[in-house]
Amino acid sequence: MKFLTPFFIFFCVFVSQSFFAQENKKIDVNKDISITKVYEQVIKEGYGTPKVYLDLANAYYFEGNYTNAKKWYEKVFEIEKTASEKTLFRYTQSLKALNEDFINNAYIISLSSN
Image (tube, rainbow, N blue to C red):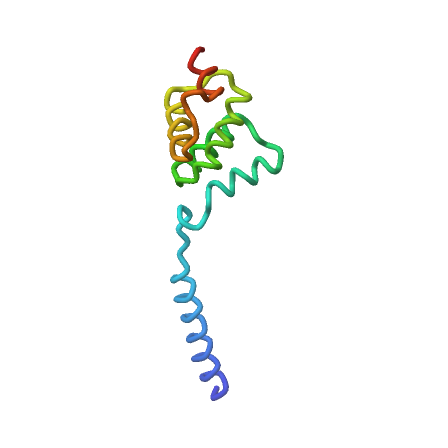
């Protein structure tokens, strides 16, 4: 019995420490996972679709990474021959942020005429 009492106390302390240690490990999925990395991995694995390209372009646009946003918007425009006004606006804003000519841009001209 004398042997079991210290063992029982040690066991209780160990279990309580384990419980409280796990409680402090909270993961905020919105902060810990980069959506752009997820979409890049999806494309890398061969599952790229115009919707995935557009979502990736929008994600880069809202991160302020206009170079990559431009790249993926253009990928969408190569596949899809139409685009929403919102998509064209974001593409134009990306070009403006990069100090590129958006008035004579081939994608904007071809999509605006449709």
